[in-house]
Length: 116
Length: 113
Image (cartoon, rainbow over all chains, first blue to last red):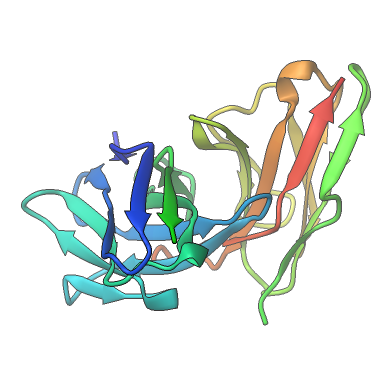
């Protein structure tokens, strides 16, 4: 079965420092991986995706993610955190075997807190 | 700008009431989804639809039904609301190919008393 794990419930970072939000996946075959962000009482916003090609994917708001096939990871990164980056972050993998066309399987989310 | 619109942001209902959550997308997407989001559980798929009048059960369909009479509209129905259905409900849509991302609405926060 396909799955996504976000091992940290919360990540705390000081403003200006680099941030990493971790994600590992378990799939058969090549994974299609996504990151989303959710601000309080809002829907999810798409940040970036990995389908194929370069392992370093750049996305919205200065975020990037590195696909590592040997470690089955897709960690989200940003060189310099902003207070406004504080939000809930979800990693997801495309469900291509479950019969639910286009569905994403989501991790449980990681709350990012950036302090001034 | 692409848009998924959920008609109600906040609802308060009583146990046993029938609840309709409406979702409309303007991107001509084939796929539409209803998720519920609960703290510590992430997003769980309730139902999805890949075409008009077509629907498939997700991971937690019990207590819910859906309707898709037009391509742009996907409705979630709680026939008899219960307190354990208090949650945030998220609608999403995507195009028909596997590499497309999901576009989400703003969410509907339902409280059942």
